[in-house]
Image (cartoon, rainbow over all chains, first blue to last red; front, side, top):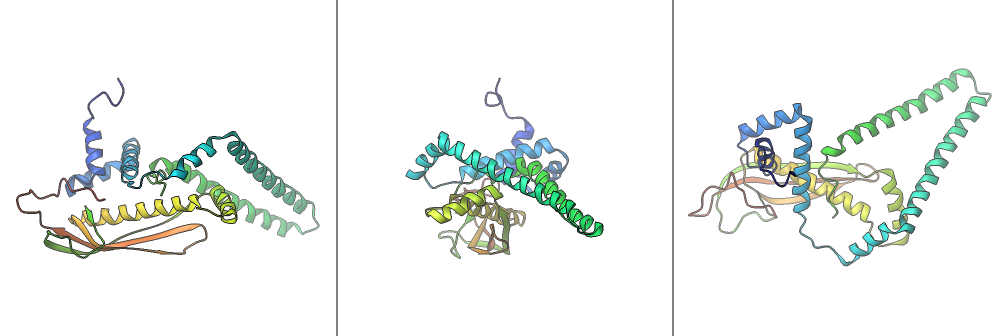
Length: 148
Length: 120
């Protein structure tokens, strides 16, 4: 039995009412508190919000949309974009590695070398933490389906 | 929730005014989209990456404003205005604001607090 075939559970009904703004203030606050404790419920609410945001779109598709969709499915587009970004990424990582090696092999004193590596390592760590957090919160972002 | 840019809704009387409500957001797309947008900027046409960015920001800001109005017990926001500014390169900041009010239900109809009419 698929999710469409069965009756919604009480939690699903509550989530729908929450997204549609139909809960009285006390029930709304109680449900919002549950969202903090129950990540699965929060994901369900985000999915409903995503549907609500997309359903709000009133503008009909434009003629260019179909052509864009066709182009983006094409081998030339996918291959070109994939190879292009892979080349940029590989070049960037290679260049960073080469610069790090040249820096390590340079005649610069030990203290400035350590400080530079700390600086670059710190930036890399910050970036990775932000990237990880973004990936973790992406399922809760209902606005990624909005096109225009 | 009724959202209008006018300061009144024809046929509906303002029952209570809750004051200013607003929603804002600053959103960015990832570097890959910025790169493709850069090339579209060179060849011309719509930069769909940034159209999407602005649309996402607009919807999120509106939702935050509606949420604030709803928490105050309003069923409409009058005089809705949008504003934008530059916070960071490649990011879109959208501010939307208006006056939250409660409109009296039309004669013969029940209060619409639990089943508000669609926003659009």
